[in-house]
Amino acid sequence: MVSSASILAFIVNIVICFGLFLGFMLYLLIKHKRTIIPILVGAGVFIVFQLITRIPLLGVAAQTDWYAAMAQNPWLFGIFLGLTAGIFEEVGRFVGMRTLMRKNRRWVDGFAFGVGHGGIEAVTIAGLTNINNLVLSLLINNGGFNAIAQTLPAESAQLLISQLTQTPATDILLGGAERIFAFAIQIALSILVLYAVKNRKYIFIGVAVLLHMIVDAPLVILPQVFGVSIYGLEIFIATLAVLALVFIAWSKRLWANGTDILPPGEQ
Image (cartoon, rainbow, N blue to C red; front, side):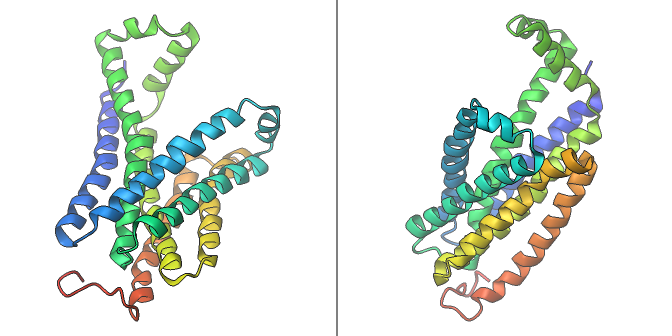
């Protein structure tokens, strides 16, 4: 049986993942004009450059010998995954902002882009997964999982049951917390790239790629090399999220002397 606490944890994660996206989107659409375009562009960039492009390419690469050999080296593998994530997402941000946001270069537009980008990431990466886990948990508890188990290899079905019944609810909730931390980081990176696009200071695209790698690479390196627990990883991500929030607040100054200051009523 899947515990009631675990089922509740899945529900909380679903609310977090969808609530971040929908809540911030509604706030921006009500509070600020013309933010629907950067929200949609941000979401579209993540879908195109991550879900449609990078992840399938990694799936193909995973079938090769060089990828398998690299995966045995945590340092190299972590840097590779972090760097490719940075290149695809930050270049995607640049392309989307440069081509589809020519009239959306305000600070709030960068924030809105991050809401779309980080929001759709939360929904597709974690939200849908938690919905799937919730449904499977309910099926296990009411006996309906047997029909699904018959379509799976016996070992896979047993592993799935073990994961759902034995994972502590607190560990499940960490997934929702991580989405909050990642959401803040995605907004900060979006503001940084928009600043680079707006002022044609393209060196900051490279800075964004590097920062993205610094966020992602340790998620592979820390547990495999240093034995850092899942709680330690969340502390690491939470620390980066706090720094991202500080940058988000400070970054308004980058627009203070420019021509893209928000009109009265949109401050």
